[in-house]
Image (cartoon, rainbow, N blue to C red; front, side, top):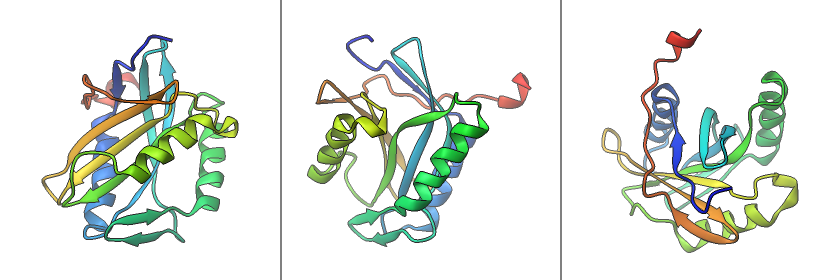
Length: 164
């Protein structure tokens, strides 16, 4: 694997779903799971986002996902993709907040990297900060227990129907 994660491919349709959830829960944090696959070691392709789940807790400055729902949906996505789509990391929002990871976010990303069951030695954390119509997306990864902001992070606007 290269020293940095060069690109996170996030199709616009998936970005729209993520931001619709952010709009819906605005004034409180929300989040979920990123599913997809690694491409040639330094690029991640997001194929799906999983929302917070029906039993998630949303507050102004924190979010607790529905872990049972996430476990079930990760399994469903993995099986439905024939084992191609796997857990890449997490996403969440900072409504009206800064476009940087909180100390808790940093600890969470490092804990994911250190958890063998996650099977994500270089997990991604995507953060949408702002407000409806003005969300800004940034991403980080944890490589060898160090957090790296993805300087070349980009949302790739793919027309997925062209490939069907």
